[in-house]
Length: 585
Image (tube, rainbow, N blue to C red; front, side, top):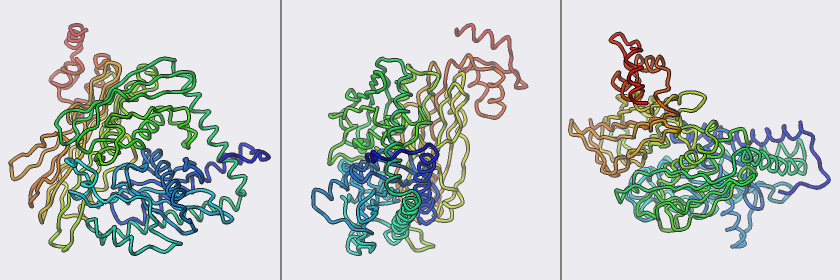
């Protein structure tokens, strides 16, 4: 939006409007999660809400409780709706709500379903309101949608182009029936659908109140000024990076179909106050579902830069100094019908990791070792004979953060792409016929370093009754999260299915589907730890001793990884430790 030339804003009014726009989005977030039926939305908070430009769908504001990866993708999907409306000459009226989940139209994977609603002021579209909710199922080969072996998009679920689900505020029962006829647990989806639409209604009311208070022209002027200032702030941060070209890599375990790693080659060129990102050296398109659509690839770079410079506010201006060359010919620019279910949840985090790896060479004091970088997507679907209904359970898990100059990495942190967390165990056990038999730290998984990485988690889920199928799309099972500046990599992800003592491990380490479960079978998962930062032999030996005392590392690991030998009473054997470190120097 271009500001009216005659309007100027004082700093206080600008700040109040900025926070007002943020509050509109925050209230949409809260309304969505509190009204949603599915634990993945209501408890894990796998969703987001925002306000977008009337003309091009550019981001104006996004809720603080939303997933960062949706920052970029929602503006692309909103733009896709706008373009579809223009191309078809559709009439858009108050109360209309478009639904879209097509990955190739600015989306992520099919489970991330977007609602997009025009916001009218004085009879004209002033902005668009949009949100995303992760639906537990959208059909496809396996319950939950995370098919590890899909080779085309049709196998992943129902794909929806932009269509009006609500017309003038009335739910279109015909379109709804088509959707519900193609997904599992359809009877349970109506609660999420109405919650998602209600969140947009809340946003409509709150944004109307903001315009009534300050005037539409003043708010429009503020939006343009905030976008300009965000661009200035990002350019100023970029200018602090030394000019040059920096490279970094990240590895995806496999595509789920071909058991070979996929490589992301990141080449970042900094010149003046701009950054250019080149991923053309990455692996070619893959057969399995680890391809990434362009919107997700770009959004992954956006969120990586926001991690590095968190003080820069989020709107479309934040991304203007970032030039991203479309990586045609690689698995990071998927075209129909390439399967993409793993792009937003896993590949996005490897892209961010590659950005961190590259810029560590340029600004080591501001960077950190790689975090766990996996959402740990696990879906279990079956029938509960006691309740007499089907279910799809979706589990997100945390992992260790990387060490940094400021200290050790935290343990069991959220994924790189969002604030999603494991739903409370008590809620999961109430909703589904399962029992958590373990939830603990993945001891030893923190990468060694002067500042060690945080630890992942172990959890074990026992199926209590009925038969079920389990599928998972995780990552970092082949190599752990990267250490930085001499630090060691974090521990890897592991998955094992215990069938009455017989252990099954996925061939692809972190990806598999349609694993049959019977009552008493146990799914055991250990998530990755964060990478270490700096030379491990420079870590304070007393800190290593405390880690051993707490059970984070064994005495043998302390000696092997940190060069610290402990006495029988757990204190540091200083002469032996000094000798070890001299030998390894």
